[in-house]
Length: 234
Image: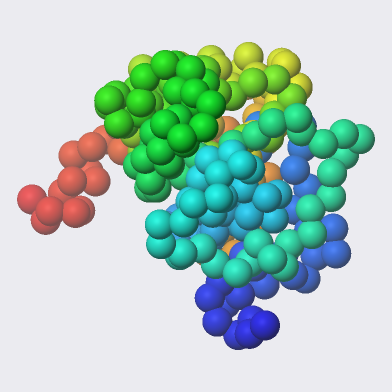
């Protein structure tokens, strides 16, 4: 297989390839942060594919394909489990959840009822944010592995707080999360591990206060005019 192109040209992939121990993921919540193009979503997608999830999202039982756009990185990953494997799981991609929702409706009609696991209402009949919260409240359960790619894309501030509350419940019930995010609200989850990808592709654990989205958001809110003058020239 050719490994001379994307995503193997991403600095973070080269960084991981040079580390025999790879990327340790702790129990509970693991956040991946970094600038656009840093590779955090690519890593979450690759972990999901290596764990047997549909590249477009859904559970390990979802086999549909709308447009194959995933990288080949997942086939190169070697996942090492702890003392026990998760009993359930889900891969949520904000950008392709519309496709997952369509598949949920299709399966509900041809197989055993599936909508009760999503709150009894088709995700297409709810707002984007409501359907996300229906998913984590009704479909996510104890002892699961949940991979989320920028879930804040559909959520209001209140929605992000509701997601934090549900994640806390599920962690207490033995679940593990791997989340790519830009949200300083989600990053505030107590006890979470935050791993930042820098411009060179290096991975390092950082504290909440040192996390880039937190620092930039705080600086902007403290002096928005300074940022706006620099951006607009006014």
